[in-house]
Image 1 (spheres, rainbow, N blue to C red):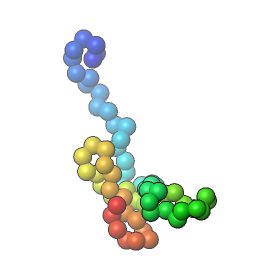
Image 2 (cartoon, one colour):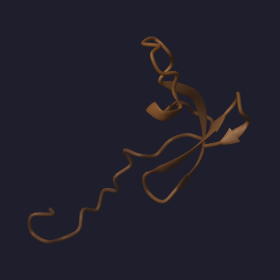
Image 3 (cartoon, one colour):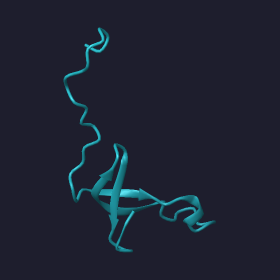
Image 4 (cartoon, rainbow, N blue to C red):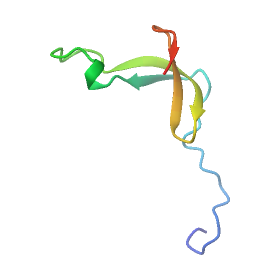
Length: 67
């Protein structure tokens, strides 16, 4: 119905996640070991919340920090 100009009545739920869901946090190139082709490019983390519509807060078990 958006083509007529009326708003869509069905909410978009594609970015909703469960608390405690396992995910991965990307490690930027500057913090990775240079020259090691097979080093990890992401770390495992758990979803703990959101900031805004697209920023996820993830808890890292190893460093015990929210990233």
